[in-house]
Image 1 (cartoon, helix red, strand yellow):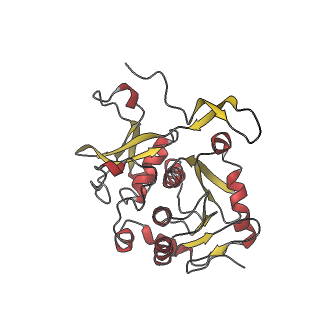
Image 2 (image 1 turned 90 degrees about the horizontal axis):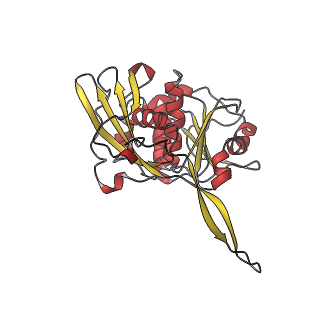
Image 3 (image 1 turned 60 degrees about the vertical axis):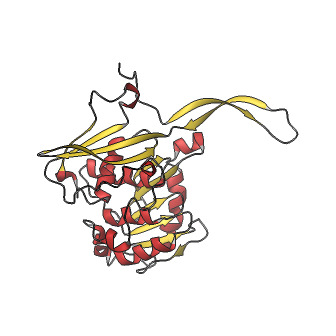
Length: 287
């Protein structure tokens, strides 16, 4: 028997709120939904195979799957896609009906999907480097070094400082739950192109990249803004998409900055209306 509906991005719960000097208050609240998503990949002559499992917030699942495969070098754009659909495997339990997505390629993959997602650690919303063992491994992926084509790009400081607030305006689910990360792609003037939310910061990046690919547009945009810190995996995905500048509210890690410098991605941290800090060479911010 099939599920009556897909899982929503949030769920109602009853809570008891405690405040100093006040009687505890019983009320309704909302929690962000967290469920596993299994990504499968197939191509002509090859049956579907599992290539990744992540804990995610339901919604925009096709975008997540496509963005994930682009970051892994399996596909390079919309021309590589045939179909993206929820799995119809009859052996799936009914409650997993909308937790498995199969991406069918129109041609053999540009890079064979790995098999490193079979362990228990596969089901996490913070998968770290997503299996990449070193910067050399990541730079070997399809299109990772494409950020170097932004050689002449300069982003105005005022645009950078405004990005966190512009991204925040798109975070309706965070407003309701307080429990999500967000990512947004912007043009050089700071206009929002696409934004997505997810319990995993790397999932949010995959979703915005996948949204561009599924719309037949290039994900190689000037600016990616994220609501938290910049880890290695965020830079990996930005570089694979061809993004020029990654702007974050928090700080980058040392390995993220090292990878960004090698891939030609400028990283910006501690971004607010008052300040920001650039880390990577080249520094693409300024007049």
